[in-house]
Image 1 (tube, chains in turn orange, brown):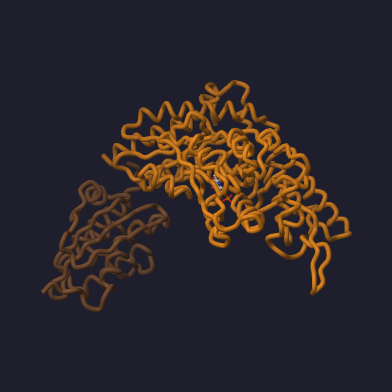
Image 2: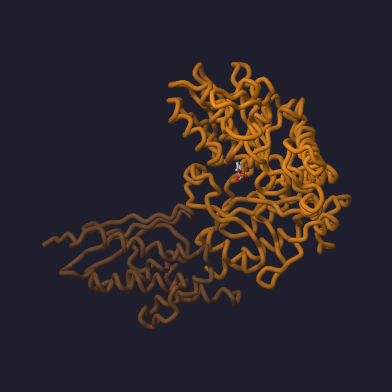
Length: 416
Length: 150
Ligand SMILES: Cc1ncc(COP(=O)(O)O)c(C=O)c1O
């Protein structure tokens, strides 16, 4: 669609080919070409992922790990190959360190309920930051209630940047885990996770990183980060819903008790006693999301073929362009202006509530998110009830930024 | 403005959003109710003063989108002076119209409020329109008899 826009993007970035890969982008919404800017909530899927799911169901589907028949063996091989793809994607040492889960939320709950209940006592502390998604707050509150542990919060500044010294100050003798978001979904802030890990490890404290927003935008190497847990969701990575992964260091997984019981996670069961399977299977009770795991691997292959450098350059260009153009919009206030930032533009506009903006933009065919983005404490901090959020992905263009900015100007005029 | 939005964002809505009526705190209210829509962060405080089974005065404050602000503003205009039964009836009628459950209800009965009927085409926005009314409902149901200052 974008000859004009392509002219602005680094000329080698195959924007037209990428857009053509995503069937959903070709449609009209309310009579206008769809401009999909809600990628931080969930990304659209390339036909490579959609076709992989369909082909898998057509030819190779059966339950895994328990069947001696051919389809069972094929499905098991595809599922375990997907695990290997995720291992490569995160550069984990071994595939056994990758546990398939429903998504980031389930990954964090797994750590809270398995690692947390086994390791937390009354008075112990979990340290998070002021910009966490509810899914990196509530699981800890639940385990705190169960164990008597306390939740502590490292503050941020008005740009939405984490105050690293304040975080360091809050790492004390009772701190048992530091759990931080890699990239904030409400602000776009990219946190210095490597430094946070170094700070915590200097005191022997493990670190969990919520990578839900980071993985679609930047290469992640869990060995280089040296983190202990890393969680992400497939659906924000242009992959299927219902699948995600938890990376955890093997020693940790070995020591952690199971958190859900059932088939697959056991070795032997009698009514008196059960012995558990090895990780990662110990944490994958029941029939998993088999096709979705295979689809997730297809999404990772797809992104790696484009290349992380190209993706980062493209999205950085979009963010810079959108941030500059946002200045033209009267009364627009950016929420989240961190120096290290991913391609997210969260904002409010004087006299126009984000929900009205969302409804109006939809009539221009533009999909943005309006609300608290599952980060109510962030809204409280910036003293706004909600924000509108445009979040960009690999298939967005400068021309779409122009459409957004022009629409915003028109809407503001209507509201007067 | 985009034509298809006019069904919902009529001039009356813009007017009441820009200049909400009865938008003030009431120090001597007989009943004060907080309404909150956690989904979008809309907040409303509704103040009511009763006299002899009627709503003698009603006002609101809060922070919300154009739909919820206009709905609250219009609501205060229409229920002022009504008996509690009449207000209750209006709540029912309004609720049915914005949720699209009853097309037979006479829109005229609701007067200016009928402009909000368009919200039924926007399922994600219906709660914006009904928040002030649910707050009113809570205030009316709060006790069998309103607290009398006399
Ligand atoms: C930063 C962050 N963490 C966690 C989550 C939760 O992810 P999911 O809903 O896929 O479990 C999200 C998704 O909105 C997110 O943006």
